[in-house]
Image (cartoon, rainbow, N blue to C red):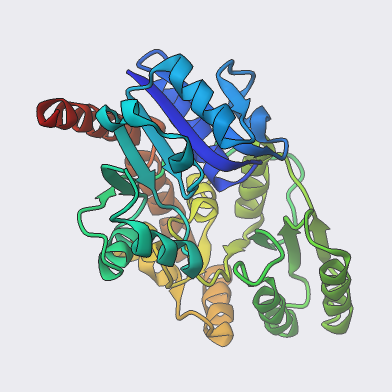
Length: 354
């Protein structure tokens, strides 16, 4: 099986990481190629893999497709692919994969679904499958994102940190960093010795970073550290250190199609407190649901954090359950087997139709 993945941005973000994780399963089982429109330094996620390229125009992409005769072509939220497809691709498996929760691209998909030549839609959560049904795209297939559980696992650290509250993400409205600062202010009034670690935001404009620094000063957060950029391969150490410190990972996101950073923290035995939005309740079901708070309820989030800071028995239970959920349900091997079986099914269906 020869597969082409196409995505707009080659950057070190959630989609590129997910593609690199899939490669770890598919390598040796299929010939996999990755093409991007714009290069932002994300090729390092593929660790020197040969079939990663930047194809900046539809004509370049068209030539690449013609040269390799792919069996399966998958675009992730990127419509430029369709400009490059020709008559020969009518016999191929064309998949439109939906990871975005933003309204504009979802509306575009709903409006153009009957004119675009894809055969199947895949999305990473039951939440996204239901959302697609609501906008008129039935029969999407739900395949979980996968996590490299060999990389993301608890790692004992030397030199224990003071209890630390960790937040990870871009400094944008979607990840809602300002809400985290409000929560930090609430916690600081109750626990003045808590430390705060914010990871991410290296692409944020100066206006936003200045606003962040001003908020730290206004809230009198004496123990606040901002790391604009951390290598992906190092993140497990931060999750592990926060877990060991007695701290918590906090999310304030407005929506998530899956929730990779939450799953990464869980795999490293780091307790989490996250809003009940998007697909996050799928990660935190049953006993783990105590980690959920009502979206936008900053006081409730602070109360959940205080609960996990103070109840060691509950904390230990959630650490174990979270790690088990991450490893048993979302490992590359478990998800990869289901994913490969689905692609093989699609190829068989298309062969029978044609």
